[in-house]
Length: 523
Image 1 (cartoon, rainbow, N blue to C red):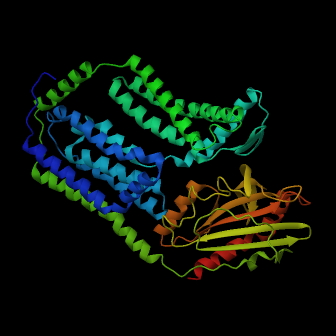
Image 2 (image 1 turned 60 degrees about the vertical axis):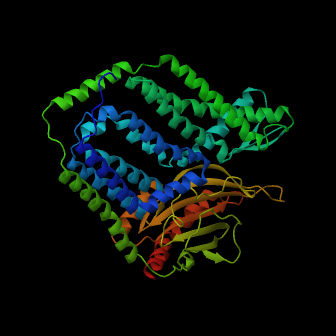
Image 3 (image 1 turned 180 degrees about the horizontal axis):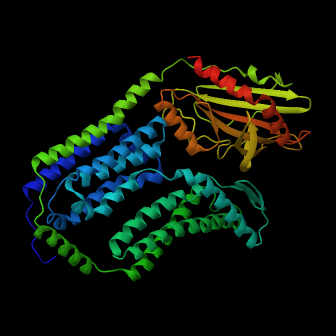
């Protein structure tokens, strides 16, 4: 830049002090959310890059200091309204124990506090550095099951196209040289998040056209997904042709990251061919900044910055205080369940369990397992009941699954949905087929499992709707009692599993609501 940079004015000193105070206030009030983010960065390799996000954002803002100095900071107090919405969103996320919502809302509040204090015209100059902070939010692992499914499908397609015979069951497949399984590390989510973060930063630094930036960001999403499919195929082929001497141990991950690194370098090298210079953009920024200085606009006063800081403090305290009140109202004794209400309509409770399978739902307040029979039909019931939910105990979580990846006893073959009538209402339940892996019998046991949630008297199989109902129940003072319900039947028995489950729910449906209401009110 040719023009001399203006000296830091008194207004900017006051504005910077106010920004730092508001940031400190938000972090202090929502420190548990902030510490939770850092803990995830520390323990998960997928989000280790997040430690660099804030320093990079500060560096990008520092690079804009000369342009910023030409603007007069003036608080935009009307931004308190969207800040209030974000605070309420944080409260809903906390009530439902949804990390993604609380951490996104917390980060958005930090970002919005900046234009609230210094004004929108000045904040517009550092829009990308501020929004880049969203990459510090450890979110994205919810797509892992779908990515694992895609990786398994594309790997098998590649093997068959190469003439290698494959027998596939869910995420596992067998080829002549051995058995392979797609686990979390094979999903490619790590590659995608890393590529998107670095690719977005690359696009901002090297392109000035919005279209070019968006195109490169799209490429940084598509390339790692396809590259991961190729990586998985290459790993299996290396193991196959080497007699399982290569790419089956620690070198499995090493080869994967080496291949990914080469792909990213090639992507950046190609992207550099369309790099745009900074000169035109810098001159435009100087012109805009100079015109902003030339206009006789008012600037912020110390009183206005103090008002902005106090406004942020007041809004930030509202949901935190409300949460403490709601937590005090939701206390109660440990729940107890009685499945006797399900022994109706000719169904008799059996002493012997139908199966050894249990869903991998973490830390429920209580578990009830039972088996029922009516004639030749046999149905198992598993109920995981939750009370006093938090981040260590919650009904709806990406960690709660029917079968854990790598389970040596059970394998999930398929998943879908099924429409049933329960207590006179239509309900879409989740449907899955499970297979017992380690068995001495000639034919392994196969189970058909139906799953849904009970939350504050409402039934759903949707995670998103369930979390919303849970938050609303706590807001209404109804507590957080909820349950995951699993009914299952063996597919190798006479009558068919689906028919047995449909008959069981038709006869005993009201009993589920009875036992849940009894448990909820017995506090």
